[in-house]
Each structure stands twice: as C-alpha cells, then as structure tokens.
Image (cartoon, rainbow, N blue to C red; front, top):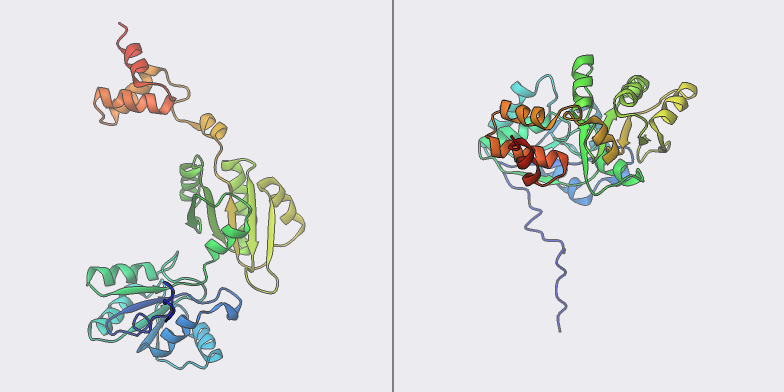
Length: 295
C-alpha cells in the first residue's frame, strides 16, 4: 500500500517561480548556513534581485554561486526605484527582494514596495527564514506569548520620549533595535521612562561572538560603563506590571466626576463615558452610574 504524502511535503508547483511576482526572501543575519533551500532556489531563478546594498548582497550571492542582475532598493531611493521595480513586475518579470540581513519589509523600506505591489495587484509571496526579532525573543528568557516590535527609536529627543511614554504601560514584551554607539544613551532613556525592568541584550546573533546578557536596565547601564558595546543589538524588555500601570494611569488623581468629564470631553455620550470610567477603575458600571446620579 502506498504511503500517504505528509501534509508538509515538498510541492514542486508551489516552488515554481512565477512571472509578475515579488518574492520576499529572508537571508542570514550572520551565519550563512542558515539560508534555506527554497531561498537559494528563488534567488537562482527569478529574473532579477532588488537589494538594500548590492555590494553586500553580491558577496552573498557569489558565496552560493548565484549570478543575477541586481538593482539597488533602499531608504533614500525607494520612491523612484520602487516605480522601476513595479514596472518590470507588471511587464512580466519576477523579482526577489532581499536586505543586508534578515527578513525584508520588517523595519525596512521593503514595506513600501509591498504596499506598492498590493495597490497594483501584483502578487507578493514570502520565503520565510531568519529574523533577529524572533531569534532574540526566543533567547530572552522573557515572556514570548505577547510581544511588540518597535524597531529603532527616533533620534529626535522629543519624539523619542513621547514614544517611550506612550508604550510604557504596555504589558507585552517589547523589542528594540539599537546600534552600539547609541546603546548607552538608549539604556539611560529606557531606565528613566520604564524604571528598572528586566532586559535581555542580544548581540551578534548567530555569529561567532553571539552574546546574550540577561539583566535589568540598571544592571545593563552599569555593565556598559565597563564594557564597550560592540556589534548590532536587539533589546528585549519585559512589559509593564499591573502595579506599574496603576501608578501611571492618567486618571489616578481625578475624582469620578472629573474622570467622567474627561471622556465626555473626548466626545463620548454619558452612558458610554460611564462604561469607560468603570472599565478603567475595574468596577461595575452600575456603581459609577449610582455615584454620578446620586444628586
């Protein structure tokens, strides 16, 4: 009797390169052995490759014996070059988009190209693989069930602190990217807004000098006073605790009436505002209703 084919068996039809299609191809973040068989197939068979840095990507392709026409596609030429790539896709060519390392379109100008293709009904498919975000989260020893990725913080001080204050009450594990020369300043800013939370600092992931430092923000600040930061970092920080949230709620100093007025000032009708106040304070809406209608 013939064995049934496994559900996840290799299907040649699914792996055929199709014209007028954009392929998002994940590439190694350090260890070249992490590239997938499917990624190599796509890179070998598409009509052309769009790369963040054609010099870096050229070295990667040469290592695997792949020779393909390349066009540069990065932050400062994405608008003009995106239209060029789109025109070639609409004309029937297939294109693989790659970054210097990791998954394209994640904290990357490839996001704009995917939007452009979606707006013009050009099929986009993803060849999964390396992602520094997921790799760091898995190694962090912090909660992984719910997380958010913030990428790089703004270099503008006001925007930077506005964003940190906006997310400081998020209970999810939060992930940032950071360059070595900005790390110490970023740790100081994170500590000033978040307090002394646990953090895992992951650097040089998958490379020979991979290092995972699991500590607190205060501990990290002290560590890097004595140890110069080296390599690119992924910062994984635990989310806010319930006690932190209760300390930082906007309505903490408001009376019930002031809390209700706040929501009505935001445009909510009285009953909807009562529901919102009750939800904030963790009580039944009937209790709030009785208090505000006591007179």
